Length: 155
Image (cartoon, rainbow, N blue to C red; front, side, top):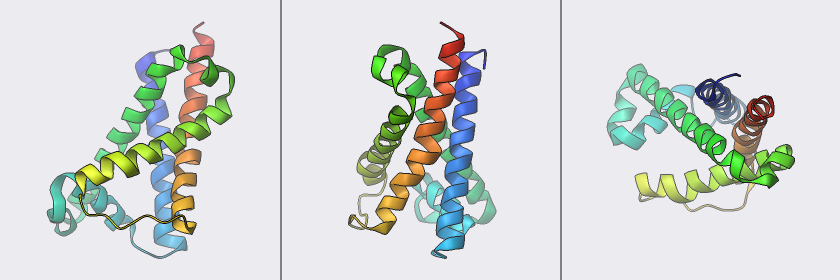
């Protein structure tokens, strides 16, 4: 990618797509806990609350748009801090892993509790590990490598 905005957009688009595909694959198809529409409506419920679940495909679309906005925000943040930390320049894979954990922490310990004051208690179990692994593999690592590629061409 030649431009900063193009790199941020690409990394956010790829990360958001991978994350959503992983969530739907794991939670809707493999574990059969929910459906793709409900996953997207759940994201929309961060803004529309309970109305999101009765809004059908329109709310699912709002959830998808909000999901990509969040992914783009995380892509922008990593891109913005990249030049200031030698560690993330030298250790792309480890940086991506740590950034995925950071994203999980921000989403699960800051954003979700702020938006939804009453959440189920978290336990170190299979579902928690899967949610962290999805963010590492689908958000952290792709954003780290795409950002590194941009900066390696613009030294």
